Each structure stands twice: as C-alpha cells, then as structure tokens.
Length: 418
Image (cartoon, rainbow, N blue to C red; front, side, top):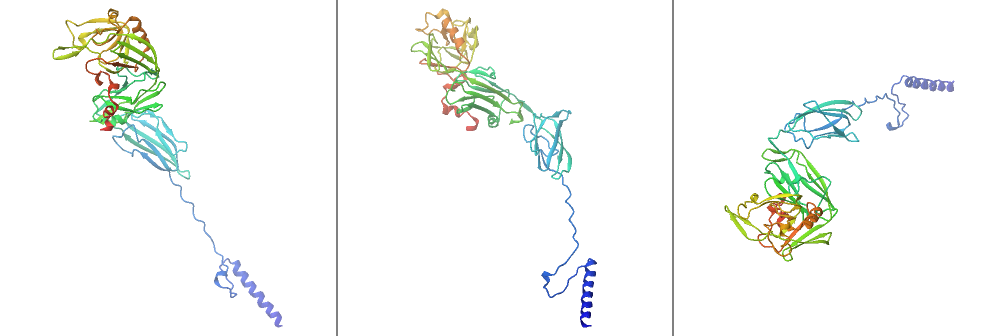
C-alpha cells in the first residue's frame, strides 16, 4: 500500500507539470538549482524594418543662387544612394548635355553655360534601399558689364595656325581686345605647354598684350599648345572673359640667319649647317629729324624673328615720316619682314653693286633677286635673324626684339613676378 501511494504522488506531480507547460506560461521546477540554470520560455517580437530613406544630395550651386560663374562649380553629387538621371534646361528651353559618372554618384554639365541665363536641373535619384526621389533646382548666371576676347597671334599679328610649323624663335602673343586691369588673373588663365618641356614666361608689353617665349630657342620638333581659358574669368572692372581659345603648332628645323656688318653677308644655317652665304647691303646709318621726330637709318643690331612674307610689298617712306627729298615709294619682290616697323630682307637689284661691300639702304637688308627668292622660300615665321656689328641704337621690344631682352629682365614683365 505504501509503494502504490508514492507512485500516485509522482504521477500527480508529472501531470501538474505537464499541464503548466502546455498552458504556455513561464514555469520553473525548484529542484535546488540556482537561478541561472533555471529554464524560462517567453514570447519574442521581431523589430520592424527601418523606413527607406531618399538619396542624400549636394547640389552646386545652391537652389536659387544668383550671379553664378557659368564656368565652374556646377555639379550634383550623391553622398548616399545614386543618381538615376539629371537634366538641365536653360530659360529658353534648351537642354544642356551632361555627364553622369560610372558609379552614378556625380553629374556635371558637358557643355559651356552662358552668361545671364537661368538654368533648371531636374534630378532623379534613388536612396540606399531604392527609394525614388525627384528634385528640381534653379540658378542664374552672372551678367557681365563687359566681355573681353583674346587672340593668339605671332609677333607679326597673324593668327597662329593650328597644326602649323613655325621657327625655333616663335613668340606667342595673347592680344586682348580690352584693357586688362587684373593681369594676375588673366595671366593665370594663359598657358603654354610643350613637348619636350621648356622654361618660358609671359611678358606684358602693354595693357592688352602679353608675349610668351622660352628662355632658350625651341629644339626642332617641339610640340607647342597654347590655351587661353578665360571664359568665366573676372579680369577686373566688371570685365569677364568671353570665350576660351586653344591652338597647337610644331617647331620645324633650326633656321638661323646671321647678318654681320663686318662681312656684309647673311650666313644662313639649317640645323647648325651653313647652307647659304648671301651678300647684302644694310642701313646706311645717320639720322634725320622731321617734325621733331628723329629717324635712324641703321639696321639695329639685335635678335629678330621672321614675322611674315609677301611678294611683292609696296614700301612707302611716308608711313614712318620720311617725305620729300630722300623719300620713296617702291614695289619690291620677295620681301621677308623681320621687324614690326618694317625692316625686310628683300630683292633690290639696283643695289647689287653695293651688296657685300657698302651699306646704302634705309634699314632693310637688300639682296639679289636669286638670294631674296631663296630666302623667301626657305624662311618660316619664327626663324631667327641675328644682326651683328651695325651702328645705331639696338633693336627694341616694341620693334619685335623679344629675343634681344635678357632673360632675367624678360621675366620681370610677368604679372606673377610682381
């Protein structure tokens, strides 16, 4: 009887425990085990997923901006998420093409924007979890009081021809059509790059004109690129750059002509080799004062470059003030100009008797017809012509004597060195 009662009690305990567990309530059987080892069962609730967020964008310039520089700082960037599509239109409804980066994190316009226009960007983006958004932003570009153009020329005033071949002494001229009061900004926008690299510098010859030349003559075969990235640049006093300019050219053989008054010959070298020696008659010397202006009849000593050529040229002494007795107006063939004020190597058969022995010209270098034609065909703009041992004042920068200026003095003409 006692054993059967113990069985019934054990069965009752098991039944009660089972009923508690089946009810799903928290239960513990106190068997003397400390609390950490007691088993508990509880219901668990999963957290809700975070709400999707839109892409985080940086729009430059800020929406509603005015007087924006159209040449810089226009962009859209996605710091989180990606850009799907960006369109830009101006106030005339014209769409501006743009470039979307490969990772769809950035966009910028691919065409130059205009002055005084309103632009609207429509931006389609997706957040990190795909949430689509659409946003618009507008801004207005600056309206300049004045605009300046720049022209990339040779010393002779002719435009540098893209892809052309020029001499080892070529000087690049950046000529603005307005006075530049902020030369520092303007010069920073002017750039000359060469292959192989050379040391060079700009020199401002007046308020509108800067010349660039290397420290030493170019090596034959040098490739030169000139860039004037002035669009959007503030050049002072309400003046902005109108448009960018760019031109590339190459340097040909090393043509150097040396006119020596001691020998009264012009010796011509091609890549260091003497290829022709030509008798010449140069400036006869002396001066004449007309209307308070003193005229010199020397061929100034110095380093010239070939500026341009023409066949024929009409030479008129009244253009530099010489009239009456001693004046002239004549047509000369095969004329190669080497100075801004009109010194040429040219044919003049009337002085063949003097060529090689006597100077009788007003400053030009007279040659025979055969030699004048040969040099005319041989020379290219930028070739070097050096005049030695003549009398009178030396060649000046205003005459085109850029290479007659010592390098240290030349560098002082840069706005960046003052």
